[in-house]
Length: 294
Image (cartoon, rainbow, N blue to C red; front, side, top):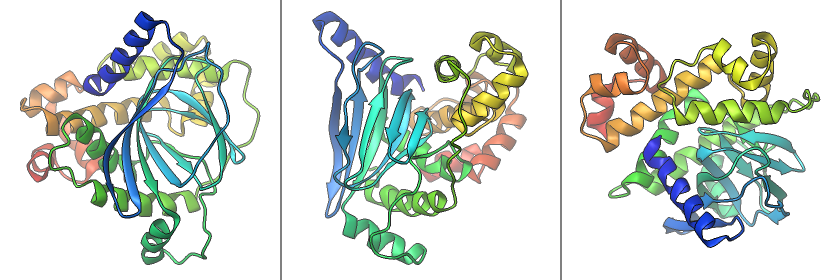
């Protein structure tokens, strides 16, 4: 998503010109009683030391651009565009950028009482609930909310941020309750190799990115690359590329006035009929209805 990534590129250029250390810069987009939404741009890179932080509220951060490593007492995950970073009040964590520089997220912060009221309606839970995983991968059930959020940071006029935050909280809590953590050890340098290919995909989702091409970029056999990529991202390479293209298309349908055919071709789909089928499967409606409903 070129318009999303441009904020990261500009921030990285400023950092380079000034010679400063990497930093995280949040910009509050919207706030209400018990909830806050912030556009967060980070310029940290491999030479910046990560440090321990603490979540003060429930946190659900949608990764829009870049990659980083998220570590907490619940485990370690590679965060990629389309994924959700989850955090509980009082939980310590670190974010590292050993394998790439810069990222951009939209963070939703919820006061404990506010989130507990929301999720009590969607699924019975005891008081003092918490996320039992630190990440949700780019899932189909979250795709409309991720795309709406990405479009919202491009043009925030009239965006119903509280409604998005409510839906995001309930869906995330329910999906996280059924998720599990894979704690098996990874091959050496696996995270760096997969990070390299993820950044390649997100820079050029329209390119001809076959399993063989991506495996070669990672320096692994197709078989081992497929296994490691899915372990780290939660999706197969084919699923990840397809979801990245559809996310880009959804954002452009909201932010641009271009023809559906042009958007489909620009996002890497060979013909509009294939694009329409894939888009309907991902978002539940065809591209024209999706655009009209925004």
